[in-house]
Each structure stands twice: as structure tokens, then as C-alpha cells.
Image (cartoon, rainbow, N blue to C red; front, side, top):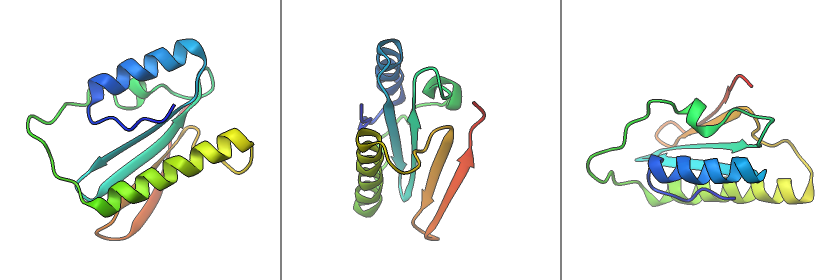
Amino acid sequence: MIDALDNWETRFILEEKCYFRGIPFIHAGIYRHFGQITTIFPGKTRRLKDIFAGVKEETAPVPSHLPICMIVAGIQAMELIKLVLNFGELLLNRLLVIDLLTFSFEIIPLEG
């Protein structure tokens, strides 16, 4: 399942449905010029609600730039390709964080 949603409440609901059906969940989120991606595998990785516990919704829409949308979507698509074709290293228990202002890509380990 690819997460292309724009709010946390719906993401948590979708991830919950995927978890109980054993469906991998490829999460991505954007905020202005930042992006984040991780892959959740039921029973093998931390859940979205654990990683982002206590996150608050924005009260007003936050504009994001098209380049971060394109980059994050491309990485999500690559995660799906790697998952389906069973090659490469997935972002399991790792969060890829992107900052286009500094062109930094950082992988943050997530405890399993």
C-alpha cells in the first residue's frame, strides 16, 4: 500500500487496516521542502502510530514545493518496485528524511 495521504488521522487508519491484513505500507510525508519515507512491514517493523506518536495536524494547509512531491513519490515508487521484485534494501525500521534546501538525505534508524 502506498501512502499518498495528506493527514495523519487517515494515514493511521490505513496503516491499521494494512497491519491486520499483513499488507506492507510505504509511508511518505511532505512539509514545505522536507520529505520523509519509511516502509512498514506488519510484524517486522515499528508501526506508523509508534514512530509518529503524538504528531499534531496543521490547522491550515501548508504549501509544499513540487520538487519535494516528485522526489518523495519517486522514492516511494522505487520502494514498491524493490518490494515486488524482491531486490535491494528496503527502508525497514529506517526513516529517510530529505531536506531540499540543503540537498541532504539522511537515514534515521528506528528501533524495531
